[in-house]
Length: 123
Ligand SMILES: [Cu+2]
Picture 1 (tube, rainbow, N blue to C red):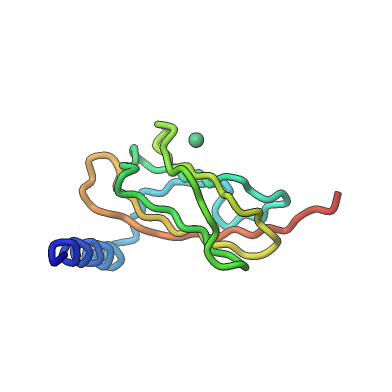
Picture 2: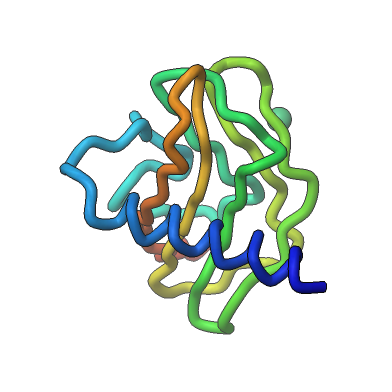
């Protein structure tokens, strides 16, 4: 029990340390693209990094008009990426993707976030 709490605290400390770091981020690009406007609702999130992410210590969160969206099956396609399926249908609005990961040989746990907008086209 105490060990679990300690481990959790160490994790948070790592996050805090990372947040005060320089402007460096291992994130290169994403699908949907960073700060993009999407005319069709995305069904997956895919983030590309400058080295292969360690899935076991990675996490993605999608936040939008309905709060936190259900995501399933975090994995890498081994293209220095993290990919996950969006289970809930996305309505129009502003979304934020929060990510945490460790890539390549870099021991630092990096985190960041980016936004995109869904503005559906009428068919
Ligand atoms: Cu995939």
